[in-house]
Image (tube, rainbow, N blue to C red; front, top):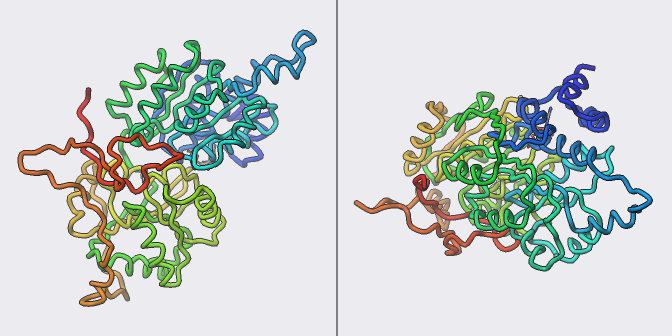
Length: 456
Ligand code: AMP
């Protein structure tokens, strides 16, 4: 079977090849082909890859192999019970992710690919009770997948010991920095042993990421599968130029007439996500909002409904959507354009995944045209303007006014004449640069962000 040969050629062990075959993968994705050999060889890695490229398997497969091949089997001098107690709460691999959803998905991948190996993994994030995690840490943990805030809480309580980490992974490093986790990351680094293997994954490479990578990685191998800031060619992108008051109606119309069965809709704010989901429900379209103010249970339920098809529309803020791993997502809608052009690239990266085609539609009101220009400049091409939609009548007068009531999203701050945009990042809750923690209040629905900082 060619898939086995392809993955086997990368040097993966039979137990992993079996799990890969079970997952139905036919051949390694480009990031897997590039990343697996150096990670297996034990060198540091700097990888440019966005979600949807298969990057998770790109690092979990070789990590599983390295840890399992170097795990000391119990001996007479060191019986199993003793080995287990020595490694309780002392992981050998730490994978840091920016969001709870991504942490959960990465750990699920570890379990999927490691099912024929005797590795133990654990996921750790905030927003849920501490005690079950404390209990789990009393047992052996080989691979820990965590968000930074809760991880540091455990370190503070001495329920977690990071001095045995042999492999450290920073996943979606760009988003970690966006979410204000830099101080937490630096703190985690001080808790790790000096001798370890480091892997850093990021969709985009700002100067800030390069600086972080420089301080973290030791003579890294660099691999890249996504040319910088380009959108995937597989995604069919289009723009509807439309008034704000007509957006929700047009979205309902498109969902119904185009028979969209699974659509991820992006809004800028949590409030906007809630309102839009309610509005679609009123139109008879099952929709759920997913964002950081929702409980973990509500988020998990919304995602499960979306994945299995009972909820065709998921309305999400950028941060909440960041970690979602949804296969074959055919349709993404930007109900509002993001304030930061790079977020557009992340958003549409949700579709056209793993080699399948997808479509991304943006509903753009006149006030957002500047944002559109910024996006087109970043991706280096003009996005096609969609033609007038048959059968759709935009609301006017009182109907339009009703659509707009209580519905204005915050637009980016206007640059005062001669002023700068480098004020503090203040979310709707006023938490300027608070370094949001997953347990307390992820930055979903954040307010306008400042322009990218100048290289330091
Ligand atoms: P990721 O970029 O890690 O979020 O992975 C995106 C999706 O691709 C996940 O749903 C994986 O299950 C899937 N995937 C990973 N590796 C492969 C592969 N070699 N062939 C097909 N699908 C894959």
